[in-house]
Length: 104
Image 1 (cartoon, rainbow, N blue to C red):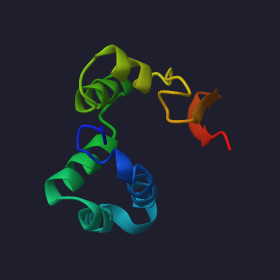
Image 2: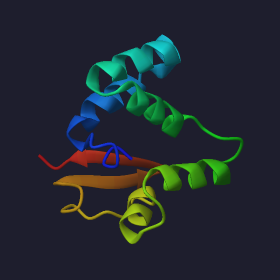
Image 3: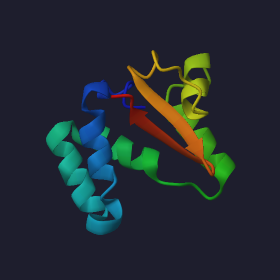
Image 4: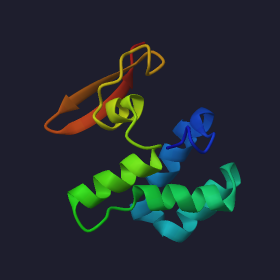
């Protein structure tokens, strides 16, 4: 999703901001995101992270906003990207939680 907004290079900053949503609320998250990108992009990111009524609707929304059901997007959503595709990061799944960590 960040790739489609040309924000891949700011992914760490974006994730740090959205991780604070429970503490600082949606309005402040949008304000902080607007310091990194446009208002429209900030609102799209907020929409992307909001869950829908059920899992399937949320998955469909995330897939659509991530660029559709192409092979690369399917792999990204399912946590199947290789170390090379992740730029040296490693994904592991523990008890259903997908984690991406550096190898260094």
